[in-house]
Picture 1 (cartoon, rainbow, N blue to C red):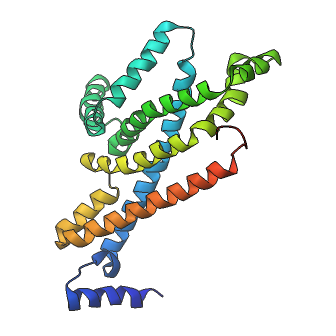
Picture 2: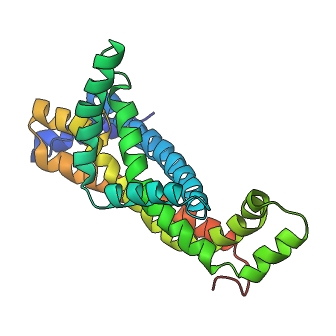
Picture 3: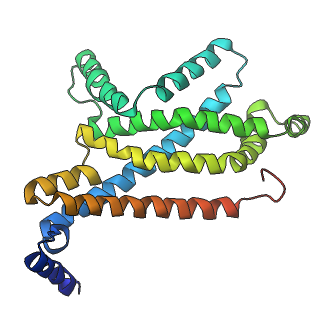
Length: 245
């Protein structure tokens, strides 16, 4: 069905020298498609994990235990103030090597696993502050009303505070999720076969760097644009008139 399209791209290369092998070469087309799938999977897993970190960390910041609040604050400062690429290298080379020596096993997590951990921890540090700001925007009278109805601190947080805080912080959270998708390109550095890594393999084989860089650019515009559209639709769907506006 799509064979005429692939043939057109092959003609484009023969006639004008624009070498887009990802369209007319089945091998390059398949591995580039899997690279995009890997980017999507990596992004979704990191989004879910970083949001869980943000919700948990924001809850722990309200703890009555000073040492627990100090640990959370230390985590935030460490991951917010160091480059994410350095963090990826730290986990993949330093932490993995240390655990391998202790357990006698090579490559505990693999490149994908360490990419998920490092990127999630990086984005999670920002998410904690985002959720904290949302929680502080919830009126204390609302929390007191929930507790007067018999909710525990955890119950009030889970069923009353967090749903309201989420609506307040969703626009900022959206921005952090967009940055997270763009940060996944750093997984290239530890050989996670995502879009940029596969594109690099293709342009090394086919010597078509300008074409592949433009394709990668378009792919990320599409992925980020789709995420922005979905998040904005979600934001409108859960909006409460008069609250958080």
